[in-house]
Length: 357
Image 1: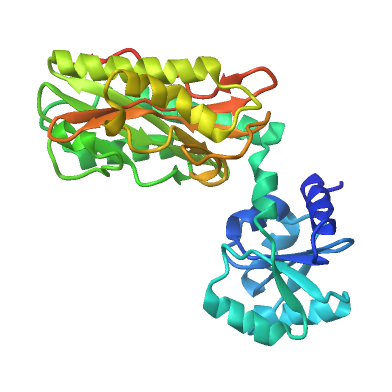
Image 2: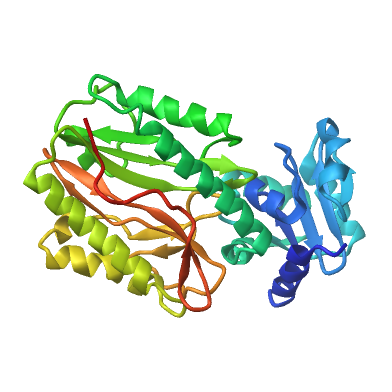
């Protein structure tokens, strides 16, 4: 069965100055080959595809990387790659410049000589931006896990419970439902700490009459979900309600108006302009969203500098926020897929202001 990802990659290689690509990034290696082991590289030419790995994966590699030549390397993976390059008459090799350290580059340059090393300019990441139906199905399952976790955690949040305990409960629940792990270090930020955009869970105990911001995701079958909801424990003040409703309005406006053909900058403006109009622009300091998939942060980005045009199949988050130092902050986030006419929202947890006693 042909590997469509490799076929599309070969088309990009043919348009470059190289005649082969060495894939060292573990996520890109898995994306192309299906191999989930912790060690190895993928080498792709116009008519060959090899997975070079070590003895530990002698049985696993052929099962997962179907259609790939499995090559077991000895003490040095680069020496084995050099042999393959010589056999395959490769003289210009594309490398993943964003993944290769300077030390690795100098070692490769020495071992692979006289092959010329060229930057690949993220060609695998360009493929990954457009999700296949099979990928979107997995991402929907990861989003469903995150939604189930939100419903579960509402019964756990109460005064006197620590942020770390809430984070742990979220992660244990998601794993109990089939997640491999959480997508990233879970954020639970309460009270004045909710004004920290990335306030990972601390020892702080939940109080009364304050925000609790939850930002987490399920890592499932190689893909991430990412959701943020903000609730109030106790009695919300007028200020709590005000900034919550502004963020909710901005987020919903973006969901209603995000369409293919927009740039990431235009997508960002959908939320930013509303928050700014209400006088809170200076308290919204991050982008409206980011790409999502096998990694928690991918291209494209919905931000002030986002120049990538949105096309069907891209998956992004929509997550505006307002963060008031000394008081607290609100963020509401959903995962969405760009479609032919607009978007499809993957996450479905309620967004009305939830007040917990």
